[in-house]
Length: 73
Figure 1 (cartoon, rainbow, N blue to C red):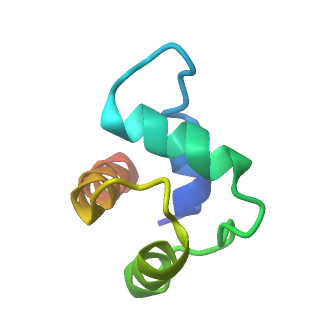
Figure 2: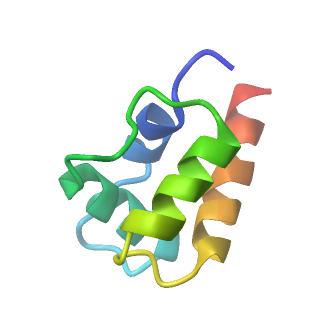
């Protein structure tokens, strides 16, 4: 994996979309504490569980993580 999850997630941003991953990306962009350098699932998952009230369900993160892994394959 070369790019960080955050870098990947920013490619999913779309302010006009109602897609769950796009909304996650839009909100993560505004989250100044988001662990932008992380490539670690557990670190990101823990951060989101404790700090990301904007994430309606962790399934959105799981789906985004799978897309991230696929993009790095």
